[in-house]
Every structure is written in structure tokens, then in C-alpha cells.
Length: 127
Image (cartoon, rainbow, N blue to C red; front, top):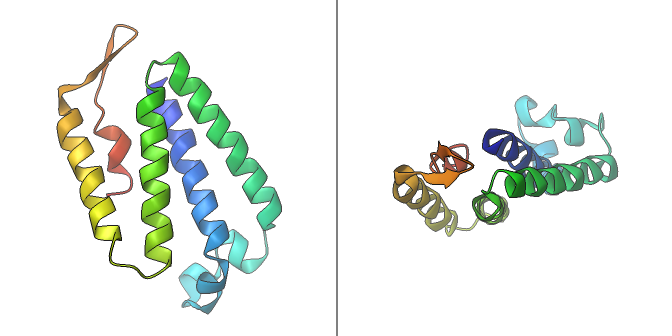
């Protein structure tokens, strides 16, 4: 269940970040220009609505798996990382380091419903 929470959280952050990067993606070489928001295949309103649903699902599943705090921290740090990187700031390095530190510290695992969950997984997709 923790893995499902992470998948929903990562997908929601990806959608939010992509929705806010539309102008930059449209100016980018063909790879980013063809993303669903930038190409107009997916409307930003529909994508953001879906991202909100995924965020709620991530937190609900995280709560059921007893990893809601880790899920929320992952979403916050990943969002800050993406927003700062989109703004062209250098602070994204600090966010990246924070994600790596969370992964290393979390290697001890978190007890969730009798299953050891490696908290580092929660930071792996953005670092």
C-alpha cells in the first residue's frame, strides 16, 4: 500500500509541475513540446483536477499504510524542488540534497502494518 501511495503522490506532483511549466515546455525542443499540456492534448484544468484527486488518494492510502507523513513530506519537497527548478533558481540543489538525506536516513525503514517500508523509496524518484 505504501508503494501505491508513492505512485499517486509522484504522479500528482508530476502533473502539477507539468501544468505550471507549459510556457517553458512549449519553447523547448521537440521532446518537451509534445507533452500533453504543452501540446494541448490535455487541458490544464482537467490535469490539475486529476492531480488533486491523485493527491487525495496518495494521502488516504498513505494514512491506511501508516506512511501518510512520509507521503506528505515527499509531495512537499518534490513540489518545492520542481517549482524552484522551473524558476531557474539554484536552491533546487538544496531540495535535491534534502531528498537524498531523507533516503539515507530512511534506510532503517519505517514499521507500517507489520511490513518494513524503506523510506528511501519516497525520495528516489526526484533525486
